[in-house]
Image 1 (cartoon, one colour):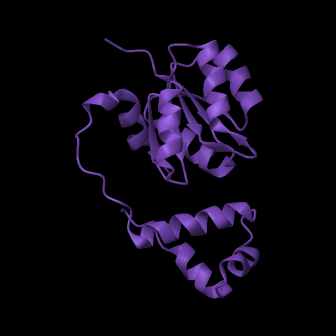
Image 2 (tube, helix red, strand yellow; image 1 turned 60 degrees about the vertical axis):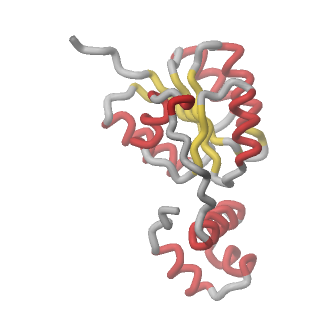
Length: 178
């Protein structure tokens, strides 16, 4: 018995992240459509008829929450997973109240995303919250400032008040797990 592939809409303004994630999800058997903004997400939802969607909480100058609300009006049964690069639990909880299925913090890979989309969030283990490590917070902050400066390492280093080569060394490392 061959099940139909999961139709997934991926909405994020980070083109490199979207392409990498879409390729991984396709490799795992998903049928993936992508969009980089709210109008594109709306068009895709109307044409592609996704079963699930993965939305970035911050879409350029707009909010993924606005996109969530509009998508849920078009496809009320849409299972939406919110991604946040800023670790804002309060905003993620607002997304859940507005109809999101669940949320994950970035960077999330294809396996984590599929697991979150296919697992009922009420069935999660009730493990106590563990705050991210200082190294993880530093890495996330660097990524946010780098994004705010359009990937320009020199401007990012100046904004962070560190030497450019120090920033380059930090960027070569993998993100800390916790």
